[in-house]
Image (cartoon, rainbow, N blue to C red; front, side, top):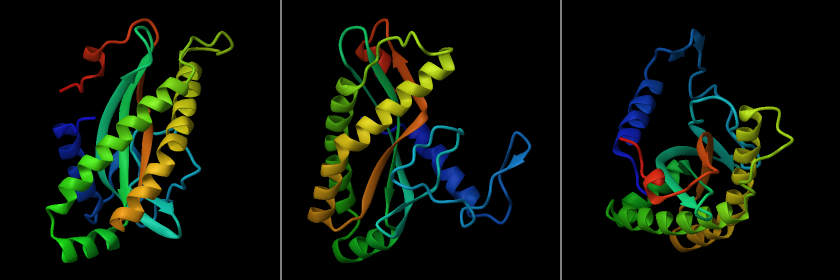
Length: 198
């Protein structure tokens, strides 16, 4: 998985804008300020909307969106998927670790996260039925079903790695696929399809 520079810059701008005193507007509908936005829970799926939630509730903590990763994998020569993954972390843990161990440790953390998230994604895609659904009423419904299935498979695949990461690093973390970002390939999957678009 590679971190897209443009996505990081965009999310930085979103976070900075969210910290301002003005509301962000999209399509003439205001988005609530960060402190008023409901936190996503680990069991929920962000299936609608184009803006990722800035917070996530886990283990009685509110985790903040820290990073965005993009990734993709092929199941076979024909089927695969790519999309964006949201990395949430406890800001109190981040500050404590930064104070105790310095900022260089986060580079090691990022490498570990990319490694286990890549493995979880490949496993999730292998377990997802990417075949065309004859019972879907249209492309949108088919996309939503695939995204939900991949979301659930990824969450199951990555759960143990996230727990182990917390035990090793003391950083409370979660990784969530951003369902609206996913593109599914059903008639040809190659490495060139999975490269991030610039």
